[in-house]
Length: 348
Ligand SMILES: *Cc1c(COP(=O)(O)O)cnc(C)c1O
Image (cartoon, rainbow, N blue to C red; front, side):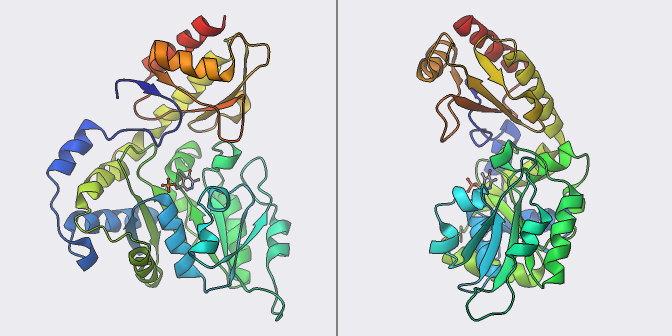
């Protein structure tokens, strides 16, 4: 990438090694179950998470939707966070595609639920009430600044779910960032949940794709759901080839992104007119607010950074002056320095 794009880790392009693997990938028809590269990715992802099976899906949204459909019957209820990606940013898939009733509970600042909120949200057997079927968590929690959620908390929620015969799913779009920040493995973090979706296409740099993992019977159902959702991709090994590098190699370097996020946050804190949320930096997200007394407006800042310096940043959706910067493979320490210097030049 010949420009600096800090808006998200979704903007990351595949690495040269990925492009080479894609060009040379061995292929088959994945809807027939005959693409060896997809099959390898699914098996390797399952193994990495300590689950029985995996399913390569087009996106995190498709993985979460397939999980909802596979876990729940029509009209049943899923408990999920009020700022969860699955509630806020998936176009209402839970209702329109899965026919599942969303029951939201508050997400705390550290990305967790209050366990009493979880217990109170679970319904008993009464003809008036929908049946509770599923509890969905998110890790890292994007809506809470990319915070990693601990194994202890996940296990507490899973235990409540098991006591009530409910299923558990983690929207783990950035679960490898969580495991890195918590100095553990994804298998450990997800040991006691039924299913997990993770994205290959964010900090892991693959051009597209996510993987859903769980037990064999669940993945069998999810595979049906994926076909219905239009996710039968035929020679998808082209994408899975990049995904295998994402899974094996790119997951091992995320600490660099977290370190770079810290350096960026510290650098931004020296720029006049910026209020940096330093205490929030735990993975690859950095938030700052452009103060009212800053030299430029949010729009001017954005435009001048792009036109003058080839740097892309933008206000976080729903905010006027609050920006989110996300580090990834293409944001090197040198590019962090370039960014801080550019902001200094514009705002001093
Ligand atoms: C990105 C993301 C997803 C899924 O996104 P897709 O763009 O559909 O791959 C799901 N949950 C969270 C928390 C995310 O950040």
